[in-house]
Length: 349
Image (tube, rainbow, N blue to C red; front, side, top):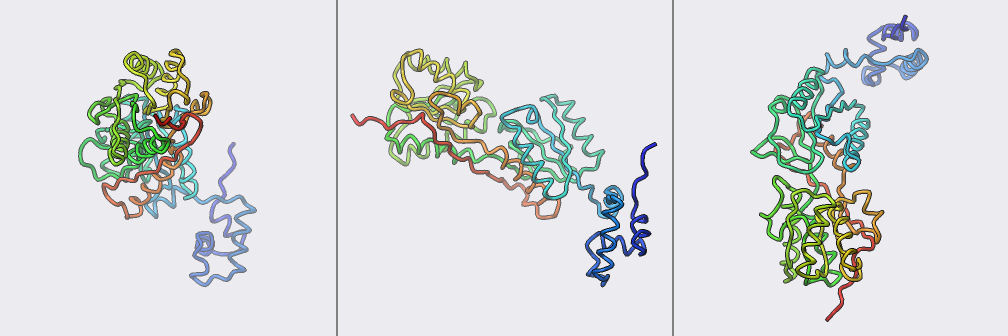
């Protein structure tokens, strides 16, 4: 037989007060209604001794809040790279005394719909709808009837929902500055997309915005990208093939790889061609995947701020829940530079 839950009435009886007095003291309104500190202390001590926990369901009926929020994603929960988004969201929710429910669709539209309906059935106060990588999405209808925030996702059509994304444009500027400050004004090629902003993988927000930032800084410096190679899937094998094909035509002075997996493949192609990083070719990249610090030499990269993205999404969601939504606002989270050993100063000819 399971133990009986300690009720507010039990606390009131143990403290020798009425139920309403116990409720006011435990809700923090005792001083406001002139309940003496001694009585408040006695009530709180009785609650501690009995192991009293407030009834969240009952409280929710009175306040219209369940103190729960939902986090629905494609593959964030099972991704080592993006999992810190959930960690950041969990800790931000915990700071507010809120419980986070997590569901993952694995890209299955029917499962995604069922998860969103499940969150509604549990009457969560709001939903964070997240993607593992920044992409354009069609906003599900189920998000139109509740407080919601898009995390690492951008709506394909106009939407009132707040959006929380990495500041990819500034990240592109950062990567470009790293090379320009090292004297690399010529022979710089992009691996993954480009050199134009239209030559990018389908729906890749990161590719477009990183290129915008890169080109902006090069143009302002009176320099020009030497070229770019579009890769449909940013995996090591594509980085290897793109760099190998580039080396068949020319020897670059520097590479900007649009993620660390591409850079890993580029390292292998450069090694096969007996070229050294960074002595022969400097390399800068994006994401700060765990492999970046294991590569030799360690890879200079602009980090995706996954933890901060998760925390910011919770803050933006509670802005909506509390009535200060900033409709349609875009929250751009800075991407910090991780300076390592893959960039060397260009030789002046």
